Length: 330
Image (cartoon, rainbow, N blue to C red; front, top):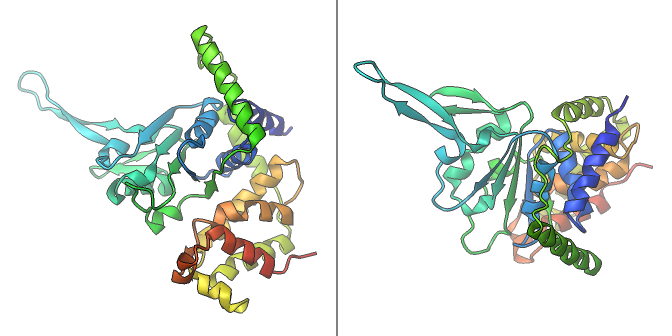
């Protein structure tokens, strides 16, 4: 028996907290089902943090938030060894005090406001699911996900994320302004929330309906069994190779791309399209699943050339060109 209805219910509960951002809700759920880390980018005030909290509030597990600032150091993220002196003449001992990285869901808020040394503290946990402090390795929880927010590059006080770290995010979700109807609904929703707070109507964690970790693991098992037809596999590979060998298509495309996507992008796309297909009740992956997920998977993995930067050509525009140039199977 499938657990899809329970995951669909998770999406519905999240939609009660986030208005006008259905695409973001679906992407966050795809991310946790695909067992990956997610980067969410958008201007301040676009509910990036709220969207991530909506996911963490509705699943079973621990949540921690790390506010990235210029003075953040690695031990603020991973934890540290603390010396405890013994009473009398006995020897003291060092004990490891875990940092916020050891939660099930970790929000790295405004990750590009901290220097590279602090950003790199996330790398081992994101990729290896473990943290090494003072030569000792500590495992993170089995259900583990880093969701980072960042402000657009170029804003004052931001530090670009290293390319190696960018590639370790399964998806890069871009948040845009809501439409007029959604914005009006946001006003009404926040007004109602303020009214409920004044009445002291606040649900505790025990009162909230939360999706269990067992349900998420069961969903992942089902997703692993979703087949990907050979024609869809070939299409995914063609899209990735177009970022590496753009000269096969047009000179203009070649002039926009400095470095294409690595094999890690192919693996990420495969995981995301299977989760996306499962979430929509499909028995196998289709071309439309690939087209739905390709920008979230590739937008942070394509390094733009000088010409693209000069003409303000975004990664999304480059991916759109690739989708037009690469033949779609019939």
